[in-house]
Length: 583
Image 1 (spheres, helix red, strand yellow):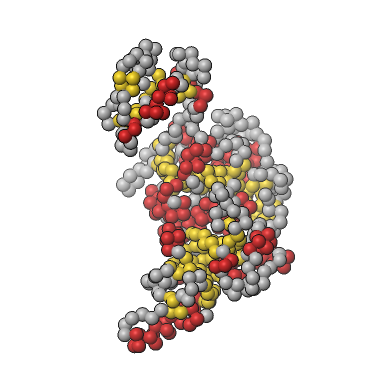
Image 2 (cartoon, rainbow, N blue to C red):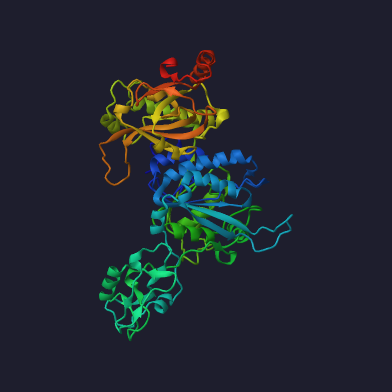
């Protein structure tokens, strides 16, 4: 899983500490160009992502200018989020640092990409402990937005915080000498808000005392289950059998730890000032190291909650290098990306000091003595076109038009790559930036295809994957010329324009239980661009499964021409636009 066959990644042995088989990777270049390349190699392999992007707060810093329009900044962040989501494992998570100015807007954008249902929480971090003379408030906090790839999977895999010494002995005891070992008791009743009738009944203790659930509560188990638990000695009534029933929870089955809280103080997790002092201790010769570094204590807390030793941590805005330095000390594998000069002026030098056993930051708390490796790549996006031409010359290509779609052959031929990858996006806008309406290129081909409304509207203004079987896709459509996609909604028509990022062969239920790996489909990975029309425009389809490809210009021109000539004869009733009118 390296980049030996990708000439855009230029290995630098002079900067690297270790060979190309090392799993710790630093890359200098534009993250919006690099992330799509990483996704093809590290897709769904990253356990924890932490990013500290430019906050767009209007300030100018030593290494970068943090002052662009909110819309342009959000567009950049959205592009990055799209690719980071593809890199995350199912139980992975992304942690995003941000301040007050853009936090609300950024969260809305993150909700769209990662899903509101996968929002795990907001950490409030005390970044400074001193008071500043500001216009209204002395702001001493920042936020860390936390999203899971899949919130249920993340809850199961995320780590709890360590407990203090003596915690287990104080909580878990064995007063009845149970052969299963120490246990603690918890209440046998729960809130009755979602209770069912079977949770309301009378429990009779071994001493013959009757117990009913307290007012507003019900028993945790139904009566049948409760009787089994009593018979199995899993319910405690006290030594004399007269106490209120409680459930026994055994240490052997417990996941010991504390649930993380959302208020992280500077005393426990460091501040910007403490992080600066750490950097100055590493580089005393530098007058200015970095304006807003994060402390290793903060990143340690994030990495330890979100990952385990040997798993991958990624940061595509590595700044002063705190994330990768902390990941290295915590024995995680990591990938760090940075476009700025601090990558060579600061980060690689810092990592060499980490390998040599520097004692600052979290070193003492994790008993860091040094060791390890990292490899360094320069990313040269000027080699993209050259690489593309080499690939096209060496990779077998399908015919321009498919006379017969043999999905099994296509899958075998392209199982490790895609049939169509939209390199034109890079050429037009750079690094898979998602175009908005002012960037619509009317000369590009657009595919119009039938999409069931109930399967598609959930994706509006987001990314989506559309699946078609061979029987539903015509052999006359030239896949390698497609650029845009417009869904036809039955009973409504066409309106929204999407970008086709990739066309590939896959299975309809990829990654799901019961997947039929031979049920091959043509998969379009698309991204919302904008509304091409103000409202849905009707199109008459001859049959249910109908497709056509044309250009945006031809579609608009033919639509306007058709309706301008039809108004007088239709007496105000819009006439449906047929595909054959503009194919």
